[in-house]
Image 1: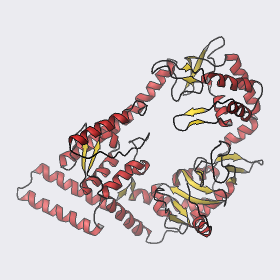
Image 2: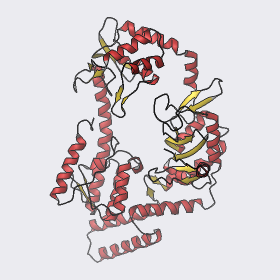
Image 3: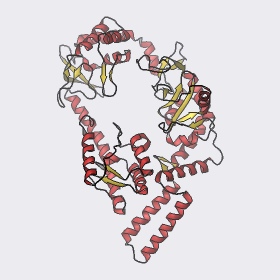
Image 4: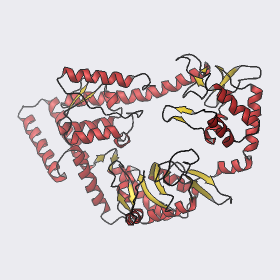
Length: 514
């Protein structure tokens, strides 16, 4: 909604005017479209991360934001990013708050404002939920506009789209004739209908689109004899203000025929089945998440590329699959290859500290510690000789003590030394119990180890190509002999398996994960 209301354009216009007022050149904008500034990890906002990297490289003189909450709504991210700006000597201007982060008073003001930004984000989420429920009670739709309808205004019910409405009727009529979802999708595509979304634009109908529409009670009359549709919100039904597409009786017939075509016993089995990597395994060639698919035998299951089914391009054709058991065994072998050396704590801590200092533009750990201790001693002398007030002395010493603590407990992109220690304590147990664990237990471990869609699988070579681990596990995985960091600069955090890389280097046309 922020994007539709042109808030981004308003921010850009204000920033251009401020740059002109201060005699600065035309600004370069860093945008994370439809991403929240609320998150704890800088890495999850790629444009924001790129901006900080450009600041460290001293390619940026001034950073201008419309308000502080456009920069960050997380206190730790705000403080960490402002340290980077300060070390690089980059000026910061918030058009609303006018923050000077270089003074102790500015740091205090910054912390307070960042805390308010985080509070506002949490409060806004609660109010948004209340607003959505109120809309549902009033019979108004929440979310994307269903196919066949169009907006009637911010506080008005959706209206029937005369160009697409016949397509929705066609879907229901074909289902009442007993047609499958694939047959219905083919008929709609042949008639020239296309789905439409803000993210992907117009696309061909697929059986998944048809099945989703045939489950959407929005199209159904609320009650027998009623011509108004149905609004569902958190499991409750409300009478909508929009015109229904199907009568109550037609919808019941559609749902009955749909249920008879779905083989309920098989669906019940599928509902109970757990897949370790569902939502985490993607095709290494096209980047689409692989679908979990039960096999003919109760004990067999697969991960399948849905690209062909969704009529999307994939270099491998978009129809291949791999046994879930194979992926589970291969991942277990990768885990088993991780052997932490006796001095792993010293090595990882040294690497983490060096990276954190590089990110902040500071010198080596020993030199930085010596500099901070020397600064602290000078502050004590200045205070004892009356050159510093008590207030200024306490603020300056607090800043030095914080820097010393962070030198001992480095934080990089939201990843702290304590988190790595906790991950290291878990890893041996996961590695040793992986093969003997239940599917449910392995599923929980995958969630702890990997980012969503964080396992790239090569369906052609039937092997794991790369993983994107949680930040706290990334350094530990590199201690083993199974992974390399990715050579692709855009693939931040990606660890490529050595086995896959070696095989592709022997290939005359090597590929890399999407």
